[in-house]
Image (cartoon, rainbow, N blue to C red; front, side, top):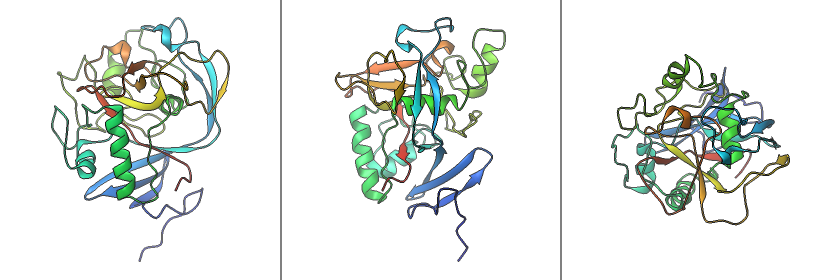
Length: 266
């Protein structure tokens, strides 16, 4: 039997079917049937959440910018949840653009909660969950501070930048595409912008005026947050700071999900 490589924080979890470290950092993968989903480790850190007032395409709910500290590392799926994984867990595929390698869509926030419940039953000690909105933006920015992790969207190179990293209204031909085809960000995450909006854990509401540590959003409110833009979005909507609020039972062909896991959760 091959010797298991050590990760810096310790041995891989018992559910891991792959693990290791590359130039993006640490990773582990879990499997459901023949489908494998890789998780990437997001180190703890501090960042400026939201967008500056002068950012092209900015909406009012993206501010005020405020410092956020994430005190503990966590894990985030390197792609949106695929239709293949959703079907392996749920036994059906609600998506309009059917392809097992494409992101699942047409799922509500409540649908995602049921998916996570069943997934965690299938993979003991995985403890998968939705990312908080702060975790999502921190991971999307990956140590950068611009509209996207490769630059701003207000110059001559804006279209080239969007085409390189995202499926959006300017290049999608009106549909989703297989995950992982565009360039990843520095944390090794694909499709953080474009393809499908991704549900987050938080309720949708105004930002805090002050610095926050491990925020999880408002404590009241009916709407839930989506992030990242989608295949239908204009270029100005595929930015790290863009937010989307919707009822938790709403579903359409733009809405998908990406999995998260706390560090050491079991």
